[in-house]
Length: 84
Image (cartoon, rainbow, N blue to C red; front, side, top):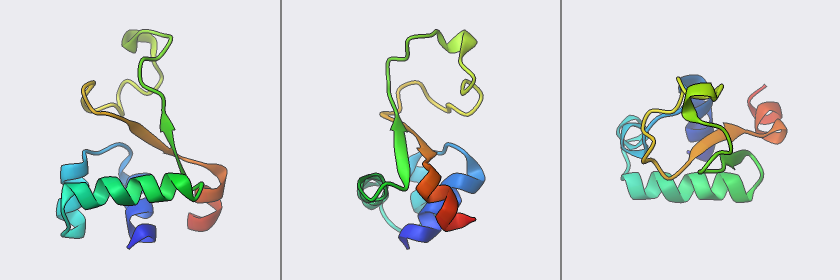
């Protein structure tokens, strides 16, 4: 299921935990724990909140669904190799 979540995250770009949970038929809390696990294993990296540039100039502004979300995730090279 972790690989399926990683694939969904990579295919869809950013999404809310709630939307990912619906697709996986699990709770949003479980999705959050799985995302944390993927990060701990080195497949995902959290993009740090409180960026040094404004949202207006951010290259991720279109992918960021909600500025109140705790994190935006991106694949690491290790995650890309796994899905490659």
